[in-house]
Image 1 (cartoon, rainbow, N blue to C red):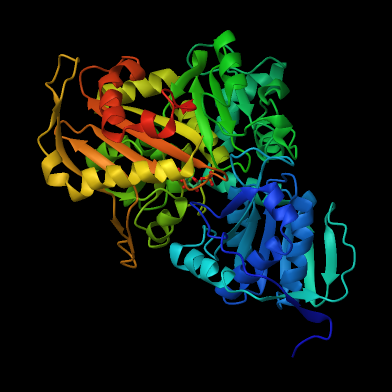
Image 2 (tube, protein in one colour; image 1 turned 30 degrees about the vertical axis):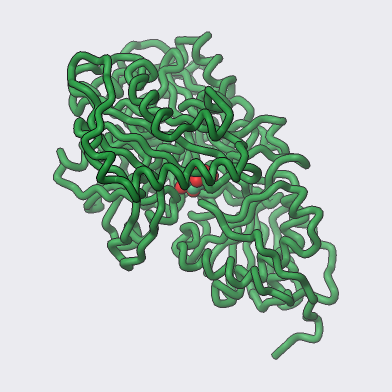
Length: 573
Ligand code: G16
């Protein structure tokens, strides 16, 4: 029965609401200034998702979140949603949202975030839909959302809309829909307690800090164990305070930039060596700090640093956690069948899988591609070069989980970050990896670059095979092209095919170059150039110098300086 309080609002369809790598991300101004922009997208989501009845709604608390929550609740209530769970102040990390959807058995969740993109009135805003498994909507669903958004002429709204105050825990009614405002941190903490032996981490790393007020102690050196966690004024702050400080007993000084701010304090909340420079500089100037971790705006990304700002590449981090998965309590009673990584991620984890006789899947960029593998029990752990690491405990990547995994490995082994990484290289060889980002470039020129490169690497791939490029490292000869193409993925579970996921050049020695356009930017185009090479013997060289020759090949083949007008990238990872 249609409620008398529900009205149809006539609207204009938009043709720019195609979800990117992870949801719809645009400048705040687009949401603010285009009438009905938010409502249209939500109506499209609800129709595409089959009119869900029970949803989780929250996000990283960035600028425009409150306005968006009010609009979304209205459209949800008018569309017959019966129950919505909202965190206090609307603030919910992306991993905590995934955990909440799963533990409450919700039909799905609407997450308000533009992840690592800057916030504030001139920054970005974003909306994404997660399905009942807690993971990002698969491509079949995002394609449907997009299709509906392009022809939508009506969205549903309540006629009478009471003013709601959702700052504190409690129960509210909106039309026929109930809204529960909850504390989301307790639910996430409960999960982390199931996943990790938090008592052991506390006892081995932080016990001295709580018992004598010092900075903690480590198991091997006898010196105080010190940590810096930097949420970059994103959503992780309150979670880190609860878990790292209150539960584990780390000193208060272990947390910097822990207050969530609508504009992230003007920072670019992307945990890499460029944007998380405060953490990097702190670790450099205080080499006695053993462990550093930075998180992004919505808490799903992480960057791990060891003593003296020793950088752990995301590919190595994934491989090392995979090798030490027995130190994560969650897997004590679970069968681990395999791991997965995105195509541009270094193949370090493949080597661990091979040694353990497990499967390793290689997917396109985007966490959504891990969903089927996790749901089918084919993988236990997965990760991406874009600072994403996670496991089957939820269906999103999880920054705090990655930090706790590292703390757990350190607590079990008594080893430092650097020791763990160097031991890993000695055991498996080293995958040198680096990513160059050319941000906010001219879109038309980037499209031309990709088209020309595709012609070279796909249409004329036969001519490329066998081409040689000089290499100054003495251990092996020239770089010789073995194969070129555009990465294509067939999902082993539902057989869906995803094409054009990254132009690649593979060399006979295992080195690779990959070029793709980012799907998470909001203006212009960001070109990502990934290079990796492997050595069993040369383990301790600076990665930039080791990869220098390969980078030159990448520049030459892609003609990137010509198309972007830039000699150097914006960010180097
Ligand atoms: C999103 C996706 C990730 C992806 C990343 C980078 O992360 O969830 O799976 O690796 O974007 O994508 P791109 O290279 O297309 O920019 P997040 O943290 O932004 O949600």
